[in-house]
Length: 146
Image (cartoon, rainbow, N blue to C red; front, side, top):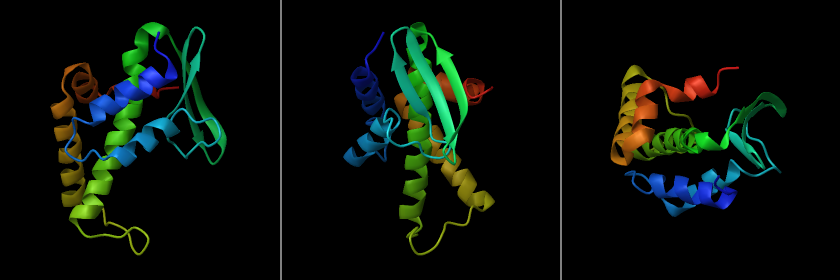
């Protein structure tokens, strides 16, 4: 079973393969393991003695608490990786379209949604392997089923 730091390092290693990776993205990965703050609908992982626990919070209330065995560490890593890639892809869209989120918002037109989906698809294609397979199969939805 991997330690928290081994999971963080493994996820960052995969993120580094994407076209939009920046060193500041390490904070996104570390936040998933931080017990002092729970972002709305942002994946949170607890490393326990006998496996992992996937958690989601909304407005400070826990809405998901799912144990995952140590043999499923690829699922744990994918869950955080997918969240980080979606966020990174959105940040890339903001940059491409010259949108400062403190001033205005990006209008999610069909074209923008398609561009976002393409950035995400390319990111997983550049990572490849089991994580690309998980992405194509919709594994995140499976992991978040209650």
